[in-house]
Length: 482
Image 1: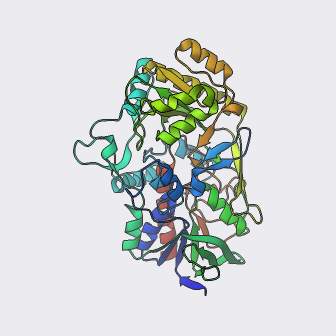
Image 2: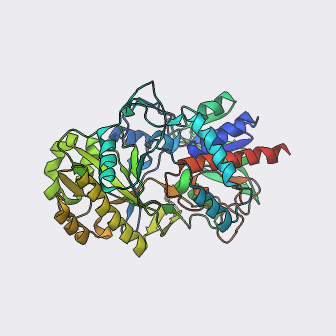
Image 3: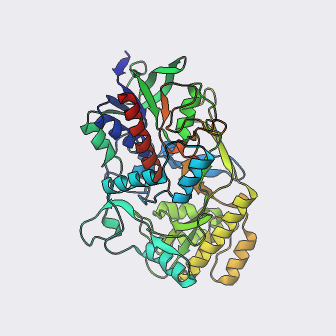
């Protein structure tokens, strides 16, 4: 038996783009139905950054790879709220210079930098974006202390958290999409179907007319088919799944050809005192070399500490027993290279590839060397770089040897920031959608998530995603009201 639903607007995905879009449209009176492939997981029911969280809230348990030389591991949230449920909650407004550049380069209409930043203010109020009112974690102080001793620019990054007065960094409550925009959407009449996988969007000429899904909670094959009829569909599946959905729908113009990420390399550093905070990350970042290179703190759950040591387990493995004195840090770059997202017939997940340029490779090496220097200045006794054959770094002489030995091909490169696979703008030679997310060649298929960002912004992209999604959703409501 097939279950059927009707709605004005079908929104595919419930992360930073989908949840904000749903709230704006539902509050404007549109009959909204959200479909989400993953489950609704209540905050507090899983330990942040744990293997249990990876199993429940990440696609493929958090293990997915963009093929290349080297391959780049990446993560995708797969749950109600998407990546906002599993990331660190650090909040960066899009840089004004970046917004200005996008407007000109991609010919984005009605894209005032002041207007976007005004929406950012609304988002910051809704998400309670603020700095930690009380004590920072030891891992945060390490980055601040090391950068200060080198005279390098650094600052605390605010987060979307609420705190009681005087609470410390680990006592905040994340204001993710399941705490903010999704409840707003549902209160305004939107519905959400979790654990429903989109198989196909059906088109008739320039219009999409229905969607075919699988209810993954149904016990028996043949009883889990779902169809949805709609007036319009807005795809918000993220920078990997959105282009895959569009390609399977037969929409390919500039789709999936310009994946942009912030590649990162990591190290683990050991100190004399307990510094590991398994369920939190550093709120300080070092921006001395931004936008090309940035340093920050990574999740340091014991399992992730062990993973960070595996590239040279023979020499590093014994350090895992000292995990309370270890913390993990990263160097991220703004990449010049680009990647591809391509669907493969008969295969559920798309093929993702990425090519780093020589400049990218050089920056990653420079970043890792400078990050190790920050750790030594902060008082690290031993630094364990994450690349095959890496030496233990205890002093400046070891650091020089590490820099000489480093090769990207031997490094564990990863990213959590994925963008730009359906870029927006009125330059049809560069862009998959128009300036407000309408996919070229269609009358009613929209994109409204990280795929729209023309380039990786050089900072955590989720503030950019939310602000642009709200901008586009309001334009949608104005057009449909007319």
